[in-house]
Amino acid sequence: MKNSKEIRIAIIGLGMISHRHMTVIGNLQAEGYPIKVVAAAEIKPDRLKAWGEKYGLDEKDLYTDFREMLKRDDIDEVEVCVHNNLHTSVATAVMAAGFPCYSEKPMACSYADAKILYDAQKLYGQKLAIQISSIYNPQTRIAKKMVADGALGKIYHARSVGHRRQGRPGYDMPFFSPDFLDPKIGVHGPLFDLGIYHLAQMLYILGMPELESVYGFQSCDYWTNPAIDKLVNRTVPVEDLGVGLARFKGGLCMDIYEDWAIHMDDIGTSFIAGKNGGLKLIDVDTTGGPRTVPANGIIVGGGKLQLPRLVHFGIDENNIMFENKIDCAIGDITGQQELLIHPELDMYNDNQLHWYSYLWGDLTDETRVDSPYIAMQTAFLSEGVVLSSDLGRSVTADEIRAMSKSIAIREQETGFGTIKYDFAEYKPE
Image (cartoon, rainbow, N blue to C red; front, side):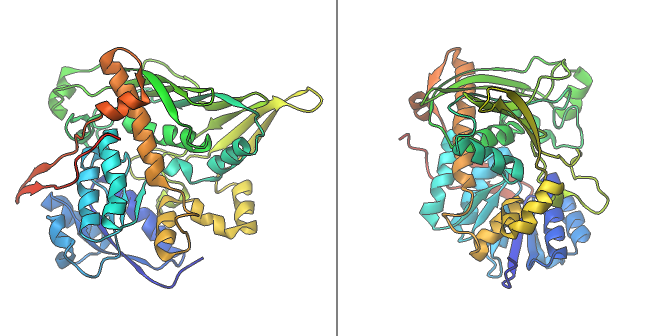
């Protein structure tokens, strides 16, 4: 439903992903949703000025220091679009200042920092959401319902997959920020980048199973070139491959594969295997759905609009094997029919509309998708792969909790001085 109360938005961090937020906002405004961007902050003055001119914000509404912006009394929510290892730092500052916060993925670069951000909701009494586009579409809803209804029987194995032939952001793809390659800002490679979409979707579909242990391996051995190294100031390598095997309570295992670049064409897709059937997940959404597509049809940051689909394999009551293809993209006939019959499901088809609907009260704590919890558990599993790779052995869930450390940035040097971030220390459970 379209609420009459206007939501006044502020954005922190005006890099590439902020333009994707603005595309969604523009498309929602065109549909009649009462939302408006009233302020924005960016530490790079030239980028700030250009962004303000592009979206028509007055100079008085543009800030190099986001802390000054948070002193305003005409902001309803803040969207955090800074890089990975600043998410906990900035998002906790936003909530501490008294604002609901919608933060980009990954939630954090360690489980410890994800837990700090998750706990900040209660500490500051504010609402929080994490951008995970893969869980907001019919593909995920249909798969989750089939698993929950027992259509596949006992689930015993799953696979989470993400692959690029050669696509290291900031290296092979220079239109992405080189911060992806900075071990202090980007910190980690594909598991904490596109891997968030695949792992979070799989955990959510499977009903958030409880992790027992994980064995992982990471590598940064893919081809590099000294000329590009110098151009992007690549010093300490960030991994380009992450793999793992996770064991969960109840007899479920999941193998994990995520790369930024590898000398291979096709490594398969994510899938779920049960006693009576299996689901193959095709074209998982990692860009945000149809509303991220601007008028020119080119999604900011490259890539094309995904068309999520499912293939259902199984054996029927006559012991006949079958294979059913399920078209479940938002824009195809199935997705359109769903919205004609259940228009309220549109709130579950878009990250940002889901968040705004939560702020309007159209969604409650009980009816919203709890993206902060899903993102925190995804960080937990991802860090298990990292720790296991570092130690050269498997790690248990208890060991992940005990060994995880807060690595989020606490001091940030800028052209106007040092920003000091003050947020809670991580205390293992």
